[in-house]
Image (cartoon, rainbow, N blue to C red; front, top):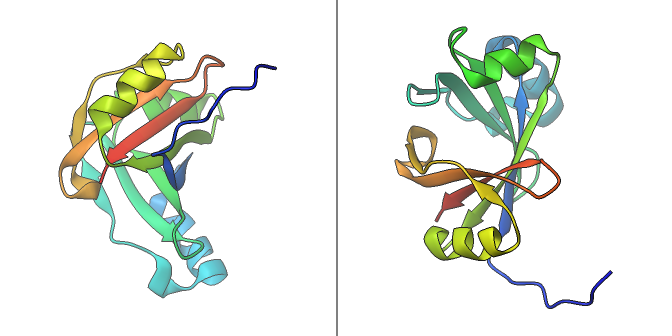
Amino acid sequence: MKNTEPFSGLTFHHVGLIVESIENSIAHYAKVFGEENISEIFSLGSQQIKECFVRNSETSFIGLVEPLNENSVVYKLLKKRISYYHIAYKVKDIQSMVLQLEKLNYKSLEFFKSEAFGNKSCIFLYTPDGHLIELIEE
């Protein structure tokens, strides 16, 4: 393994989990982490999902993602019984971070504005190993 200097700027935010029913999942996680740690439910039309966040520590969350319909990408994953979806990071300069990651053979998808983050810029990227990450601009 090469000894390379890591770059900074990625701050862990959440792991995204696909669920059949966000309301049922909220009921479970509220018992574990407390109702006060459950966010509102966001409807993200651009991604055809509902999403909410469960605070599980001071600075990290579990993102619960439910497909709104059969056209949602996460619907197809849910039907294959894939529930672990992605890991998300907050970044200060999303454009610069995407360029750095692309130099490391990450494959970027399209930028979008997320209602769950105050319409800030976000993007999904595939790692060289095929894992999905999300960047959220701070």
